[in-house]
Image 1 (tube, rainbow, N blue to C red):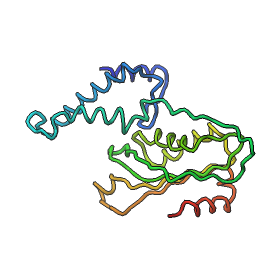
Image 2: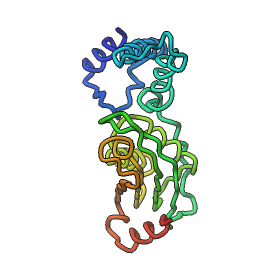
Image 3: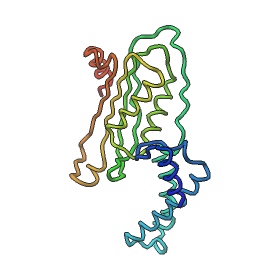
Image 4: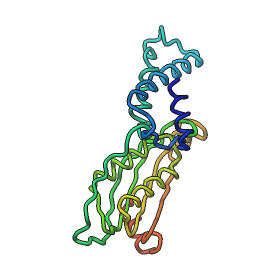
Length: 219
């Protein structure tokens, strides 16, 4: 099984492979194709264990291949693909006022049940010496979102990467999402949202700066 080979490699290198970790540096394109086939076989066995007749049922015939492709190429692609290129620009005019980006669509999946959580993200930046293009914020958010995880860690991962890339004077990340592990199953609270926020630098130190950002993203 290709998954065992990849796992052995990760363990020998001391590399974590939790649900929301990226392992793209430790898997080749050829191995990724083989992994997709392995996942397809595993999903087929899951469907059979659920007593679903995928041979005679036209609606589920081929579902195993579609599901494997969906997980590897789409909804969990943030685990298997390289980080999008973050082109940096010097802050030549010494822009020091707040920049707010959002709302950015969030589509992720709770690692407890592998069902979606969907919502919006907002990012606030008080620049230092570097800037990045506005589209790069969205690309970065989506790259991190396309993994199984919990919302609290998603906000932290986005903030960590932005601090690493542009070292801003202040950084804020707010995510508001509805979780299908609460709306589709469990308590079935269809109107419930979870909101998480990460405030760093000037956003943490200054209540005025923090409140200005929160006021700007209302609505």
